[in-house]
Image (cartoon, rainbow, N blue to C red):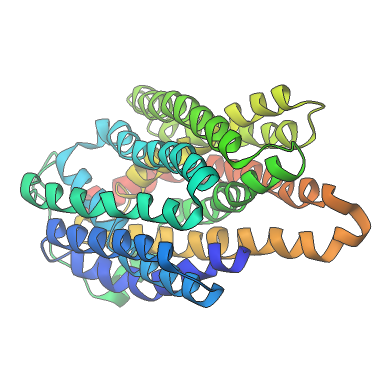
Length: 375
């Protein structure tokens, strides 16, 4: 289960993310995103006709191929539409996609699974994306590269070696990458096992799980993501480091909330902890992706984002669900059904540590931004 959820996706995503991002740094990003959306939606729907673990894994490979064309070109376009002062808020609004997607996936998917089966749940999840791809292609325009910068900048694409050396020389970027790895472990490792936890420990059926998780994620995620992005931009006007401080503090707050969710004496308190996680957990993504674009050159943005997500998702999405699943299998004979509490508790440490690393990254932000502007 952990292998299909994590490595089944990450394997193909990791192979294609960087080449697709390089392509997006010099070509039409709208067309790349459209093609990726068609592939990952279609492969999600094909999971609905899978009849074995191998077929499910192959469909996850296909989703990974499609999603490699999603995030990096998208955030690159957003950075060309919004100036640095508003970029955290814009990226946070973009991150409402996963928030509402999580709501629809959990709420609708839970009910469809309960009454019609998981095959139909995959079909319901995948087919609408094909229509969205058509709407996106017909309505979205490709922005001019560097259009949002205060002064004219060089938008030429540097070589791979030069790009990697530049990224590695920016301490803030490398620390953001390290923090991303830890917080992504919490996001995907914890997220993948939340529903099984509620079924095994709280004895909820899939319809109940979908209703509770979907509603809480949507409401708390909406509030936290928007408020976090706005606060990062508002405070960042006075001191740019607050664009990193805000998501760092929120990531640390999510750590104790994970423990409340797992070890609360009843379901109501547990769901309160989950609401805090849902509000605080996703805050880091939008502001920090926006900040990362301020410490690399314009022609490096899509590629730098792909590296950020690639390494973080290999660790977080690849290892997170698998490690928790392996922990469950290894210690189930000793801890019984409650083993899932202890395996998922590792997510409390990773999100807190990720937040600490973000705070450290902020100390290098002004220097790295000044270097990028000067060049």
